[in-house]
Length: 326
Image (tube, rainbow, N blue to C red; front, side):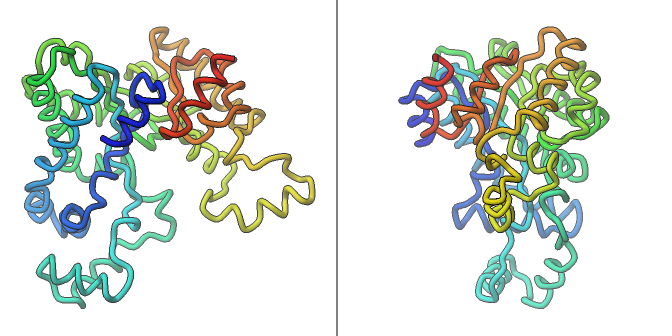
């Protein structure tokens, strides 16, 4: 909520990316999330989910109330799971105790779910499809937050649900089916239900190529330029500093593509996806999401495209507003 207030004070007209997994960084919530991630079966997960809806409902309600009817785009759960799991021996022991497990048993579970390349692994839409109860938990919490906020304000809540890391239209169709089944049962206030929308992040090259068929099933696209840059270049943003500076010194790269958008490669992917998406769905809303949305040179490129909004971190909002005004 503090970040929301900061962004609004700088002139933000909505939230383009609410990272739902960031609600779980407090100690008590982290234990609950770890219990969920380490669940062995559906019964374990159902037990772990108890209480998580309440945590999120309060947070979402406060965000919706703070935004007073401005659009709030919530990205579905997208944690690279390794970021939320214990690593040090001390943390593993503490986690085992809080979960009622033997240390050895916890280490075996951690070994079983370890991924070689978690940024391209079990995350985003893949999590929602393999663990539908996690999707159900999140949509129920969002709807409860809408109902709660609606009792405190006259402005209708404008909720936009965004599915991350999609690569196929079949993923979008399946998550949309599950989402709307829950929303229709949630008894949202009529004005909030009318404003509810469903979209997807476009952050993989295949999603750009298949943007036309994906657009037929969504209300909006949000281009996640950080991951789209990673997956178009095949470069890990976290590991890039080790060699990108050498590339720049040798004149092989004119700029860091994670700071300033690569207009010839990544930019062409975005341009193509917008054209294909709008051709299939002329009313498609288009957003840009990522640190590039706070970079003046990248913003100048985005301003030449048929986009509706850009979304960046709160303290970059003034730069984005000034650049786009120019």
